[in-house]
Picture 1 (cartoon, rainbow, N blue to C red):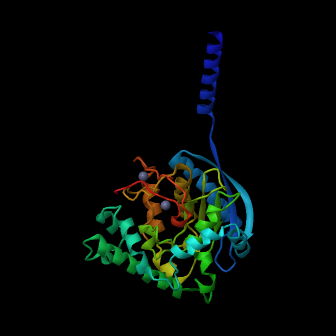
Picture 2 (cartoon, rainbow, N blue to C red):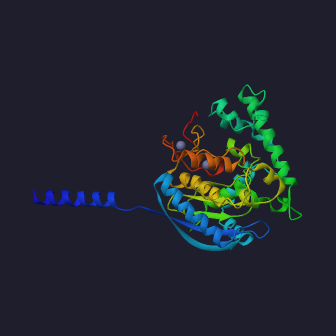
Picture 3 (cartoon, rainbow, N blue to C red):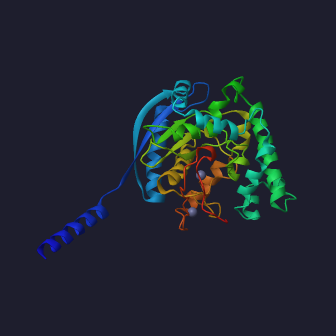
Length: 338
Ligand SMILES: [Zn+2]
Ligand SMILES: [Zn+2]
């Protein structure tokens, strides 16, 4: 009997200590810099991470601790990490990836259509400008329009120059490819987050996202599963490029004078951490919510609305990790009819 009481007290003790224990989420960050693109200073970088910690506390009630894993050069880091990707995954990737310089987007229409049908038509129209959404009455038309916008905006970025050099160079296509980086993240060791300054184009069109499609694929990051690298079983890839590049196309698509708006970057990083730590899905049907991604590259409007509204009180749906299938990038989402 005495033994039972002791065991019970021991159990209650463990329970109490785990409830009162301050939980800190450590994020191991590697900074990967490409000298061909605009970058921010060490001071600005630290400002973003410090601000991000405050915003995570305020919006998610989560304590973050960043562990600096140093700075690397992009070409070297990319080559080293690519070596870790097994040949079978490279073959799958080449088969499934949309080549932004020579691919045929029509091949991905069934995948895009399937993605769009998870949402109400009106939710999807919310991602388009009034002019862009004109005449759309069904999913088929929506898919055609979205593919047209993706192609048009991507073409504008391909024509864009920064310091007399093309922003996207065909011989460096792999470095901009979200599919390529997802494969790297799956095989990543040591890091929870890669922060960089190079363009990132969503070319993972067999598993598309409406909010990046309508930006011409230009995106600031994603979270992908990581087989061995991270305690979160996933890692973040995040680029400053959409915020700080002064390429003319980006300047015309955005709505603020970056990089003076560093808080916007730290808020967007919170969005990724919401995916990483809390496993939240995109909250397309929540207004003014940090988990609802910005429309187009209007990051300032997104930030202004979120800071005005404060913490979102709605319930956030998580996405489920059901199985790992390298050829289809392993994510199956909960069926969300937004
Ligand atoms: Zn997201
Ligand atoms: Zn929300």
